[in-house]
View 1 (tube, rainbow, N blue to C red):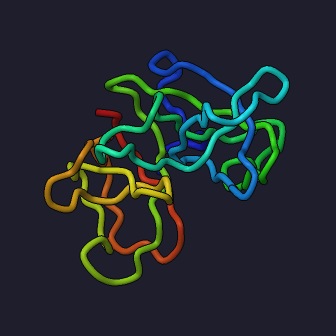
View 2 (spheres, rainbow, N blue to C red):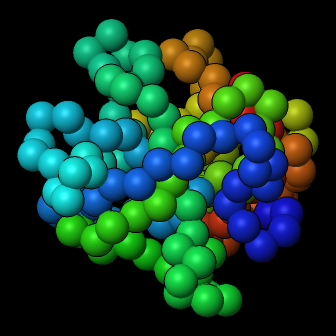
Length: 160
């Protein structure tokens, strides 16, 4: 993790807002997508954790990286958004630097992230992991090494 924010290059992303879909929770650094099949809330779309389309590739609509709610103060980077809550996010463009949520894998193939590793989104979780075989979509490249995460961690990365 670098800095104390999710988005590190402010000029390389589009800021968006929305509402967390029923039954979902979001953490800063997680990757989500709008669910256009649901009604708007206060003129904003609802969102759900990233799930690939039927072709296994990108989601319908853009990737959205959940940002911290700066109104929650110092603990914002670790604060969870609950179902129905208004959230802040960004749609990164190529070259954008951010901190992405890396799930705790325990032991095994994904127990280490190395600087330079290509990252893909874990379907249904919205966290990033190292590429496994032939990915449908590489979203970022790790800019730091994380030896063995023991809990959900943020990894500094550059959007691809």
